[in-house]
Length: 577
Image (cartoon, rainbow, N blue to C red):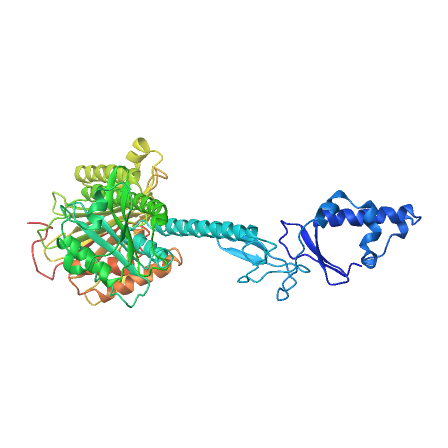
């Protein structure tokens, strides 16, 4: 009689072990057993048992297998010819099947009522198998196949993790350091990346070891000796088409040249047994060398590792080349931006300083600008403006607005409000869809006995900040109107503010005060606190510390210009002699 059915294969096999009364185990496939049950039920119905009077749940287990033998399905006949097997006694009654998790790792899950093989059991090779003679070489072959599949999955996971490390940043050194930490210790015990600079010198940029305490940071990094004519593996790799396996590491005293000596010294410090040196090639250029080192013979690098290392080197080279192209584009754009900014007047009683910092997260260009020049009457014109955008188009528009405002200010001897109104009218004709914020101010002295005064107009821009010599700060809230480009007929008022001796007026763009996680009031208060603490500092130091203390995040470009008045009775009544 059937005493128990226990499935202990994976669901792919659909097979089970049937325990007979004498303790014998007969293997029956899932389809064969289903056919046997159906045949048993058909026989009962032919003998007079109505369908509604079918066996209760599990009652069929009490019946003999021989009673259904006459109507057995052909699959049951084939199942009887399968070799008998005995389930291991130490295997729990759970199922074993594998599911793929993100990243390539394999996780084993279990289901109720099915035997599950231990992960390190001799019966477990990814699929259930026995080590007995009845299984023969089939189980061993299955084990070998599963081991190769797992090995391929591990390599695929390594490539995925390496690609994620390289794509996580556009900074070359940071990306390579993350890459080396991914490769160590999975593929190598130590890893080093050498890159060629613009002068053709080999620069060891990153070195990582599985034992972080074994090497000091930056000890093995830096400029390497000349490459030309060297017998070092890295020098040969620069001329090779693919990775090279290095075994039988020579002692240091057999070095043929300085670069070879540096390489052998590195291998000695890393206790290298085998190494792979691969060139970094991208877009028909050789960018450097990837060095992988193994210390033990049990996991030595061999010829089977070369295809994987070649794939890694190709990915590294593309990432380095892309990062360099991005950096070059940023430098070009920043140079264009700075070329559009003017040189400040250097003579006269008024002290001037200005700064521009591009946004790190963008193309390093934007629409922020400052300007300062002296009019014929001796008044100093100060301008700060911001065109929306962080690209070349914004920079080009900014240069157009700056030149147009300069021409209007030099041609029309009018108050700042009138100048901004004329700029708005010109924008409506020439650039009808463009908007910008701007401050136009004049610093002048009407007579020798009077203090310097600031006449200004603000069009949608953050208010100017006045900082006295004693450290008192306040925002100048007069002369305000909406931003330019909205309504050409908008009235543009202006305001006048007397400036105490040795006081500082700061004009700035919103990148100095705005942060995404907080309100504008918090940024304005922080600006006042920093400016008050720097009230007596030299004007260049004043601007530098404001920029480093408030614009360190680099999410937006920042422009600022500051003017400081002279002490009483110092200098002429005009901005320049």
